[in-house]
Image (cartoon, rainbow, N blue to C red; front, side, top):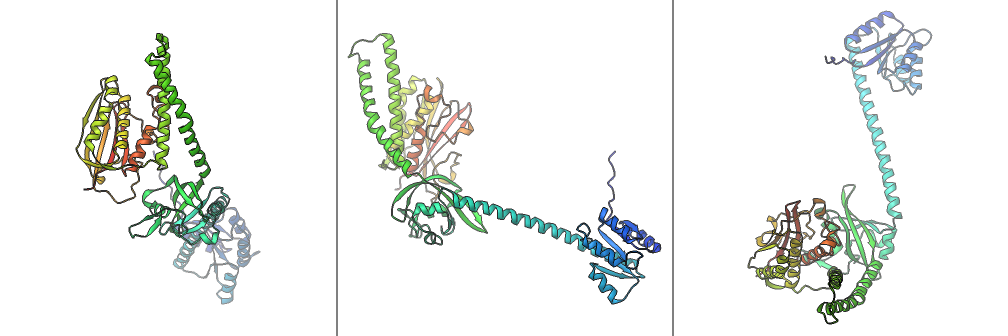
Amino acid sequence: MPKEPLNLPKADILVIDDTPENLNLLSAMLTEQGYKVRSVTKGSTGLRGANAVPPDLILLDVNMPEMNGYEVCQHLKASDRTREIPVIFISALGDVLDKVKAFAVGGVDYITKPFQLEEVLARIENHLMIWKLQQQLQAQNERLQQEIHDRAKAEEKFAKVFRSSPNPIAIATISEARFIDVNPSFLKMSGYCLEEVIGHTVTELNLDKDAVAMSDDKPRSVYAQTIQLLSDTGPLYNQEFEFSTKSGEVLTILLSMELIDLSGVQCALLIANDITERKRLENEFISLVSHELRTPLTSTMGALDLLGAGQLGTLTEQGQKVLSIATTNTERLIRLINDILDLERMKSVKIFMQQVKCNAADLLIMATETMQAMADKLQVKLIVRPLAIELWADPDRILQTLTNLISNAIKFSEPGDSVWISATLAEHKDVELGENDHASTQGTPLPSFLLISIRDEGRGIPKDKLQIIFERFQQVDASDSRNKGGTGLGLPICRNIVQQHDGKIWVESILGEGSTFYVLLPLAAF
């Protein structure tokens, strides 16, 4: 059977009085009111009891043998263990000086004998309430002091990291993109001194050589625009920007931004990483790939074509197999190099999009016809549902995107499967964007879009891979590069092309049932 809840006493009260009648009266009265009462007749005994188990309140007589009430109270207040216990004196001495002395030694109240029981109860309850509130206040103060201490330590730690970090770090307000603090690494990178930065806006310092026009027709730094939109866009990680120093030197940086709150002020924490030298080496590598690798590969491919055509003699069956392997891998290497060059040129905006009015139906049909031979070879049926509508786009680049997506759909389909290529009209607000939406949505909603979908019945894509397949050299399965002939760069190129058209690309997939890639492109303005 469940135990009945115990009735706990309201408080523990120690009564010290050398008169047994007073002790019995007070003990009976307080016990009846729900208090736990301990009664002693000597001051020394009361001190030992209070130190052993401190009570919540003490009722103390003044006139007692050996040690009077004043002396007992002084001993209580001298001990850390009993100092905070409220002491109420009860005495037949009614002189004002006696009361003053009681308060002087630490008493909280003074009741004159003979006393009224109701008065004693009222004063006890009063002082117990005051003592309880004091205890709560003390506990709150201790917690507050601990929080202040912890916060001071955290701020000290942050300040130490902030000042000593080799990465340039700055804090700017969201509302105006105005700097309120920067670390020495930021000053070293920018070339400014602290007084030239603090209190000034990003735009005033011309940290971005290219200003953008805002709705108020005032030019504003790309940094300022990005900072002020941080509340809407969320954290920014490793975004590439150009950074103009005080001397006019243009650096390439990777910038991360995080929204923080400083004493109620919304601010942006900016952490930069200077990758200027890395970009220089990267560009040199691209140049090396372009000039030093493609030329010999082209010659190698030409030689293999001559061998395959039989112009240098007839090959045995084994020789034909070896030649086929060499040709396949050479073509794969050429595709990889071309994809790397294509992607890097797009990132550095060295490829200019020749956007014109073009018909979406023509592009879908052309892309389908281009991939028909591959589909026939792998016994995959292509079903196209075009929509005759005008796009404002670079037809060659959109065709490149569509053929890439259709090629992927075919490669990951089984013989007898179908791939559907269709187009519909969509308003921006009506399109449910997937998790893989990498495009910027900082502007106002555009009026109308064409939504192109490429759906297959393949193996599908795991949920944890949906976000990474649009990154460079990322594939669902590491063996895909070997078995399917992919480079891991097709989807990043598609994403870049679509983004440069102010569009979006994303994927939805169910394992074992297939995937659908979506491309959202703005319609031509009439």
